[in-house]
Length: 417
Ligand code: EPZ
Image (tube, rainbow, N blue to C red):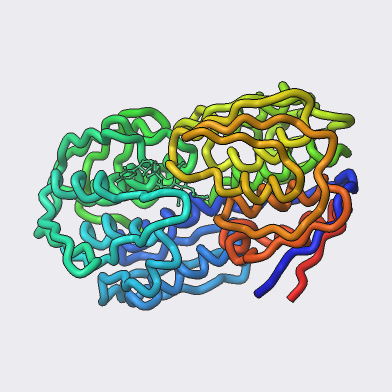
């Protein structure tokens, strides 16, 4: 079991390249199922979740190759098994994103229900109800979603919760439906827009993505396309927090402020200096930060995937901060680990009060989920002495070579087996 060993106290300096977005790559890979022509994706991040999704599609009969420019070429012309088995879905919930495309392309799908997840129940009822509204017959048996539809038909669908993958699943299903689909209370995340752009390049007719009403006029078939995956805004935010916490000056390449304005605004309030350019961000910070309260909510509000990293930042800031998590019901597991480093955090329900302490002291801690792992890394970078982080397989799901990137910036961090 790999661990990460960090010696804190080094201000980060230099340049780092931000990878393609995990949460854009996963739905974009599934979009390949909608056509029998090749879909080429550039800027694909090398992540365990991406590898899992590619394995999942390969066992369905999709041809997966890397071309000479390190772009992914997906060809679902040979799709012959519209199934997502439990042993693969249990390691990655985003497998649910194959349901809509498989149903739209082949008329049937057998997808394992995503299991439970550390951060919350994360049901997929909105995905299922939306597909039923489009005429799919769906039953759930022995932990599998069994779906069939001769041809999906356009429908008006209201999502009673804003759901990112729900919006993406329904958008992909609607692309090949007969008639027009209107998705109301749709997710507005940039990853939804990135998917819509790719679908339209494949010949779909999606409009309104990025707003809360998305309209999809179904077409008979989709063609191939070449699409470059947008930058990862959560990796961007994670590195911005790491620099703010440790001080120093870093330039982030291959990313932009406009996909995480709420995070940039909070970091400026905390005292970091941030310059935004077309596809780079420069950040510098010195001295103690101001505590910043936050409340997570769907985009464009403050992202839940940055909540843990900001909790770590507030642990050593001046003053007290109130952190409210409104998206997931159990996303404070990192607090207990931060306390082991000396943090002062009081939790009641979905609200945590973080009182800044003069410093954190290194200790052995355990990662519990993907973003909690990132929170422990940034805490380790500022804690005095050594921090050893266990169960970092969570981290590898969503961050490409994070310790190499941090080492390039001067961090004293290494993977120990
Ligand atoms: C996506 O998950 C992201 N994953 C998550 O990132 C992110 O935290 C989340 O959106 C919120 O922004 C991917 O894009 C692959 P939701 P998703 O459906 O789509 C409830 C990370 O760290 N809900 O937007 O699964 C649900 O329980 C991951 O990269 C229903 O009730 O999240 C939650 O409370 C973690 N019924 C809320 O909606 C449904 O059918 C938002 O969930 C669907 C969702």
